[in-house]
Length: 166
Ligand SMILES: Cc1cc2nc3c(=O)[nH]c(=O)nc-3n(C[C@H](O)[C@H](O)[C@H](O)COP(=O)(O)O)c2cc1C
Image (cartoon, rainbow, N blue to C red; front, side, top):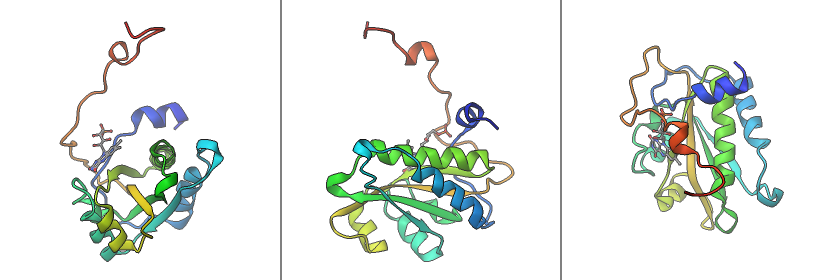
């Protein structure tokens, strides 16, 4: 699968087999995050890998649409000190990881953790840090059910303007 195909065929997947993710594959996914550029090359983000059932269940209670994430074999959190947190940088890391994972046959989904007080309690994150997003990772089940939010992407004609707004 080339880069274009990986990007245009990636869909977010929430249903995984219980198979563990081999260490070499996880390493590759983490390397993809590591190589993402960051604003001013600050590299403020840190990644936390969660595999334990208890901590994954605790994280499932940290977001309003995260109730399902405990069933993912691996969850990777992206954390940064609050004053250095840039969601664009978080997104770059997340997308790098998810595209590489997809090219390697893994499913993934980005998930918002809106309750940072609960995140801090669940994982011992310092008070001045935030972990606003996690991605889930796992082998997709054979028949992935449609996402409840499934729809087509906007056509390019609607998405893109040229030179001026109108
Ligand atoms: C910033 C962001 C936050 C998201 N938060 C959640 C979430 O909390 N829970 C969830 O199940 N999916 C979450 N998603 C996944 C979206 O629902 C998904 O990207 C969208 O429905 C498109 O899915 P598709 O690629 O399968 O079409 C999030 C996606 C993004 C980009």
